[in-house]
Image (cartoon, rainbow, N blue to C red; front, side, top):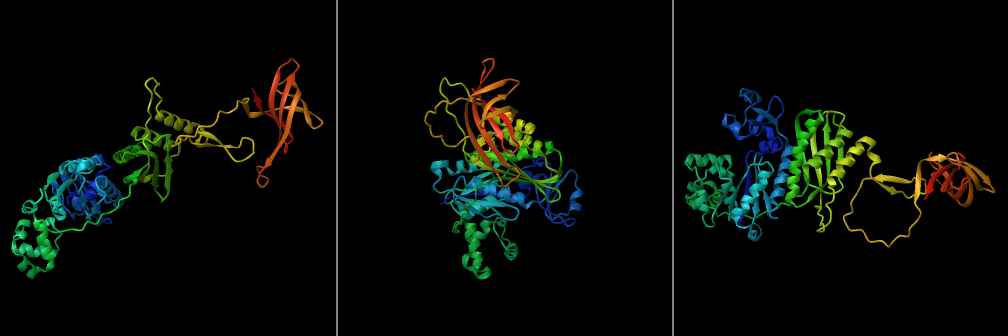
Length: 498
């Protein structure tokens, strides 16, 4: 057996500062409770260095200069915790969550992973590197005993990576304080009265006498101090979800200030997607506004990508076209994973244009002409003239089937809008018509084709269509499509044939 323990101290503060890099080099405290009864629940190293401590009130904190106070956010902590469990799950499917109120702790069963990640120390450094890329400072301890790995990771002033050799757990634990164990207040008081301060001193106590005085729980503590306590791993199954959430310290109204925060959140999404070897297919942004309203938008480019600048530009253009109607209190980003796109070009094949340029161009065009006026025309299941809708461009994930070679047909050029025509009818068929200040005599007429629909709606329509071959007095031949609106009794030229 072999375990790697990932331990994050001051987790509430680190979860808040992860998306606030401008505060990382300043003394920061996290306050919990309702004003004016707020107390310090977590703080960073710089705040501790100037004398701040747990349980201080806001009035006491204000006596220190240049201290940033942040309100504790359980939602941001939950998002950061899910992200760390997801990161740990990339090394082993057996991950046990043992987190505390102000600290994150998970233990990974790394038995049998040497062929994938190398020796234990190499795996620990790789895990620590991924966690640091997420903006979290942590330490990793590796041991063949579950509780020994936890105790070493909890040790104050612990190294970033520490590996306990197999069989030397008792020696490695001997100098650690009793605070690394989960002691009750009564047990801590008893050991303090006895003068027991380290795990080595606890391990040296005789087992029978210790159990007779403190009960069977003392036997368990002694086994943990000696690195001999067995453990049954209870792994969790974290879900992979590309989600980031941030509650703003003050309401934001300017789009540039909003995009600065979104940029940091996108960076975290892309780091996580890259670690899972996937790309982001779409990003949904949900803005919680003052008054309880919400503003949600979704951006989906033609191809999945992990280009942060592209996502930032697309979100910026979309929010410019659809701005929120109130100040923003919180931001949530949800990413949809997709397959990474790779194109194999031939040796002499010219370089294709970047898909990102097309996405940005389309976004700018949509901002000018409207959301529903850019995309691919798709025919609707109707015989109504101009019965089509506009859908966003999509690239199919699978290779389309090769269709048989189509027969060539004359090209039809639609006239938008249709142009008026004055038609002379003989024997219920068009005989001649005036079009574009020229008279044409009909030589051949095909039709009529009658279509009607939507009798149940105000958009009732009925049309009579004729395909004509006509010739003018100067010999010019015209092939076109004449339509008569049966509701208004009007003739219009809707298309010309080449």
